[in-house]
Amino acid sequence: MNSIIVVFDNKAPSFCNYSSNASMKDTLKIIDFDLFSNLIDSIVDENLGIILVHSNIINQEYENVLDKCNFTRIIPPNLLSFYSKDNNIVVTLSVEECFSVDKKLLVEDLERVLIIRVNKNNLSNLNRAILNLYRVAKRINIVFESSELLATDQLLMYKKELCIIKDTIIKNSTLNSKVTEINAFTDSLLNKSHNFCNAGKDHITMNYTGKFYICPAFIYDDKFKSLENVNIASDFSLGYNSLNQIELCLNCPNNQCQNCFYFNKLTTEEFNIPSYEQCDRSNIEKEIADSFIQ
Ligand code: SF4
Image (cartoon, rainbow, N blue to C red; front, side, top):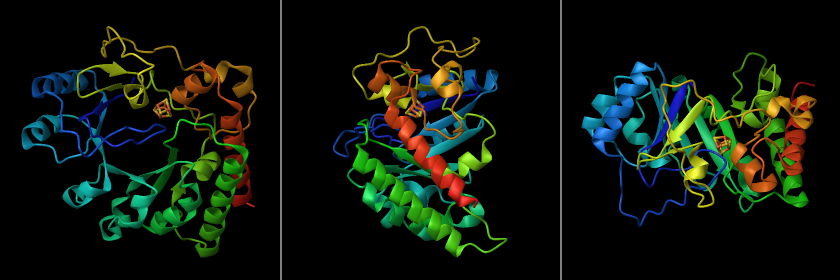
């Protein structure tokens, strides 16, 4: 294991393939200070990193503890003005928020990474959302916040959106200009082998209540329970990460695949078996990547 994700409060935004159900009307609840402080001590002892996801400005008392370790914070765009001088932040935005975020706070020399959350209802705005921000981000990760399978027409729409993004980037790039990485197609060119998420092996997640989960997606889904007897100091693997060993994935030429254990479990009831929809999505991304370098 190399890092712990800490969902610091009950309104922390989603940053991967799930919806956080956070409501602005809820009263803010944050992690207990002693719990946080003890966790950070263990993280320092084990030489792990921490990814902190939070919805509000964090008190200095917590920040002082946090300073003991290597951390990245994932924040919604409304906190960007407060943390804009930090270079260890990742901003997670809905497609709609891509149009309202203050782009001056996303200056290129800070090498910002953005996560853009799309769902089937706003898929047709994906190209405009990304093209609005791609010049001010070093990297953009597209994630799907809906846990529903995309229908054939939605997959075609996804392909069309990626094509527009790819064509626009190519049209506006000069020989030596920097190209923003976009996980859906540039990763395929950069990865030398299958790149899966490895939740439950490379990282696990602690909720603000102190409970551990495979990843944040499992916090918000009542079908799943928290993990028992987690000891971050032990040699850690939950054993869900053998995608490279199943034939379907073993022989797959697509190194970029958002092969998500949570989504797999929802759709096929197996952590290690992706749905065909996931393969279709990955094939689309591979096709766009291949046409990117032609
Ligand atoms: S299993 Fe991995 S890819 Fe899927 S939601 Fe969790 S962290 Fe994200």
